[in-house]
Image 1 (cartoon, rainbow, N blue to C red):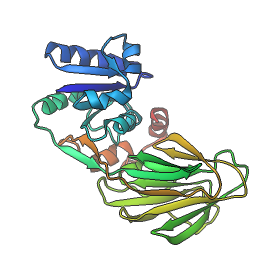
Image 2 (cartoon, rainbow, N blue to C red):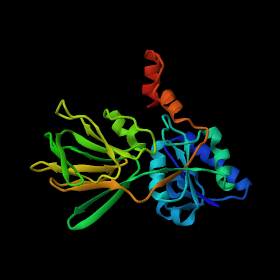
Image 3 (cartoon, helix red, strand yellow):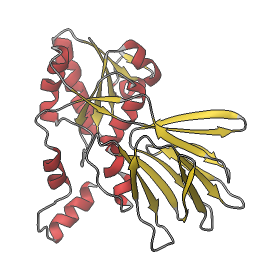
Image 4 (cartoon, helix red, strand yellow):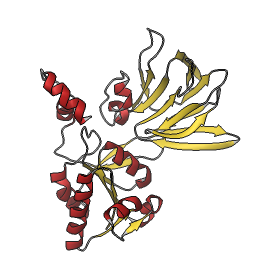
Length: 293
């Protein structure tokens, strides 16, 4: 068993945890390699580019927050990912820092279980070339720097759903429902539900609401505007600037992300804890949540 380790290098605590992890693996004779940027920051020689890690390693360890795990999952592909939360909210990262070694031991002993998470596949044709992108959380088309309010035209399985005048459109998986979509007013959806949610960003129409659809639907989105360029983001990363009328097709990806599961983790408790549900939180609580976010 050989582990690929990806670290959020902007957090000193994540780097300290990575050093502790490397020592623990060395003591047990377990092979590992760091992603290049992580290795440079830690000043270690065992490194490989993020693109090479999938070919070299059997499993991935993500040390950071949900953003680090999202980044790792894009390159892990079908390999299991152990998410260690060194962030704040941590909806995706399954394990606390205190649980890190026990989680790795389960993978080493082959006694672990997996959460299979669906992904989105976004495709578009730019200058005659087919572009394909994957997203675990969401695919987002925004107005960007366009000075006016564009119209986003959405079709489901070829039938017109609606034309939205808005600042953007979010298409999220159930996993991504607690990310940007939730911030834009979308519903929280239990993980592994076989649905997508389409959430408009700041719609300029009072009757527009998010809509939940079956994940076997094919969604087509285009921007109706006379000019301009519009950012296409997958999991928070800009992947393309779209011209008006260019169609982005979004559907369920054939490739799943395999997250190592924490059997002790209670999703309902996570919602109560992370979102302060059921608490009469005062101004001090609100200030702390703002700082943590």
